[in-house]
Length: 551
Image (cartoon, rainbow, N blue to C red; front, side, top):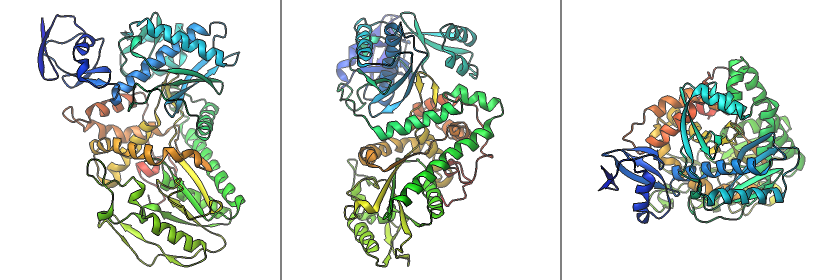
């Protein structure tokens, strides 16, 4: 018999008992279904057998790591269902592309297009697999053996990925002889995936899953056409350069093609910025360019590069940070924890902003404020503006797309731009890279360089930052006149050398350790490269340093 501590209470179990069986005994103590065990501070899959003397707690679908387990396992079931159902078509390629809200877009290259009937048959097959509660078996294989296995199954993206793995062992998952690879933890059997839908969408599928906040609620899929088109364009850029996965990127680095890759990617971005500037100039009457996007999207560098392109169109841009309209610190609203909520619209003096902007639009001269972040108060330092015929204000801030921010300004005078780092790169065809991971690494590197903040502090703050984005930015993104994708396909290989030392500073005793460990494991897939060849106006320079702009 083994004695273990479960939620601080000593319990006795027979040797060979799994953590899933232990979880069943304490499930009633948790508000959502248990997904993972935390054993002596380390994550363990529920299929693992217990360790004598272990101290155990559990994570549920409402926890970030638990929700990721749900998404991974549902994805593997989907891939098996597609393989089982599309036997005649035998798709050439099935790739998990990106998230659209709570849905995941899966592209399919096949002789016949995906139809609503195909999606329904795939969903029905998924339900059969779920109802059968088939074990999700994990096997640690020698790297060469795993390469041979996936080569035999035609999964060459995984073969290419494993070429660059330093580990001698690869964890391979199996559902009834369907083999796949996923980085991260999985649920113990297919019966754990209770809520999902599959829809035909844009030549592929949408796998619609519950969100982390309400893991038992499946909301209808909400298309976001502008976001979808921008993400598809990023995919097209990657395909043109022959880079869909990390293995492709690593291969090009090994072949000495990095410098060309950097130049082409930067040229793609500059071309897009020039297109946006041309559209602004062609519209006529635009006086306010409103730029908004989530944290670490590269808004500052983008606004400077856009200003240069606007000048090339014969306009005279003037950058203004909406942060300069923060209310004085003592007037800042508080969040549910009693901390200052700098993300909400109430943290901005909306009335003053609209009064100043309306006066400028009317041809008046206005003295604009500067917010002093040290004192927490607005100051006036003689920064006076008066708009001439060719003058245009470039306003950057998280509320730029919200019409409540600029309620008094005519729509014809505004041009709204949504910017985010929407990475199109996958680890392999079935393992997408969340855009939030790229932005978190960007912010971590920048915070350490410019603010002396530790990686621990950045990770600690990230959930609050993400909540602010979900409340104040994402709901308004489809209202933008233009989307700009600031992600660069090579950037994670550059950020790796800066981020790893910061992440290694987080110790097992820190609550942020699990997230740091996950990010370190993720960065292992990449070959690191130097930043020396980056142009000094690159968006990546905003984070690693060396920018020609005041960022």
